[in-house]
Length: 476
Ligand code: SAM
Ligand code: SF4
Image (cartoon, rainbow, N blue to C red; front, top):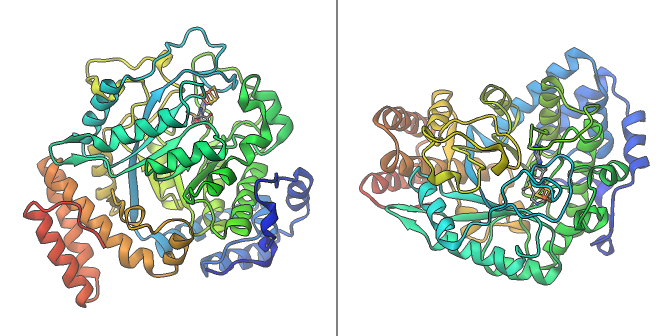
């Protein structure tokens, strides 16, 4: 992994704000973005180098249709080079929607008296997890509003409950969190519960906009949120996810903010964020936002492709906020993780999808891809993607700095693809209807055929046979 000199800052920047809007606008206004320069930058990224702020700004600046096509093509090629055809699957699980904040874009805001406030009791949480396991899920992200009831201990207890639930061959092997910022002691408590990634989205990196859209509660404090994942790092959580909510401010500025945030982590902690999320604002109960900065599909595709090129080794997450057709289209430009079978209604997974109508007053926002996990599996397998439920790195301690070491060229293809095939085989054996099973095993056979014959291929074949015989949880 080659780091660029621009990000070689000093360690005492930890827990200090790092966004200078003038600096970001300077890059956006002054970057050279002629064809020669844009092509040079794409080539640098295809060589698996991180891009600087100035280089990212050049890609953001160009409006030349030919260059935009080349950026998208570059992102496609890079995705294939770094990640292969693997797509990691997970599901969100909302645990409680009490909230003391007033974020204008969110259905759970404290001022929304229409929303039904629910916190899952332990047994209700167990029922949700069982329902998720029974569809084949192995990776969850638990989501919480910001409320004194959801303190570090409550979140840690929820994580432990989730890990303890086993339904038939089902188990959850990795629990990520999306919740409010904590102090360092709080993050320590959560780390002890063995969480995967801790995600906190900055929403917008533009402080004046941040102040306009966050109208109450702790979340009004821009800096406390901006430095939150530094505190997580200080507490030993080296696996963190960042994000921006697109539609609040200029999309180009937000992309540069995400890259600046990545630079900060690399400079101070020697490891970038594990994932970047880029939700677009969706309809929500009592939604109250200005439409000036809403991002259209074309610009959304561009921003995903540019992020892929700017941070080649960072996971990119695209959620079911987006409709199926857009998700299927954008996958090719560098997305590495998606949710499947998503239901963000509190308690929604244990209801029967066919008989119950979704209730927007129990949801944070509207989701637009209602496909079941198996429908998503069919779509991915049909297009030659390898759906993966792999959790090997997290369980072998290959996270943070270590993860970076391992994600040197070759690692992902050598280890992640075989692990993806092993978890796919488990899913096919335990949860898939016959047609999915046949197509899935055909995909596995093809992928094995493409591997060069060596000891490693033999080991994988052996493990796949063990899965067919009923062994579970095998990985490299
Ligand atoms: N309460 C925690 C917090 O604010 O960090 C958890 C956040 S929320 C449950 C997860 C994310 O959903 C938010 O950070 C925000 O980016 C996104 N979100 C909120 N309202 C949204 C909307 N109307 N459309 C799309 N995404 C939304
Ligand atoms: Fe609360 Fe989070 Fe929604 Fe803001 S985004 S109102 S903090 S749940």
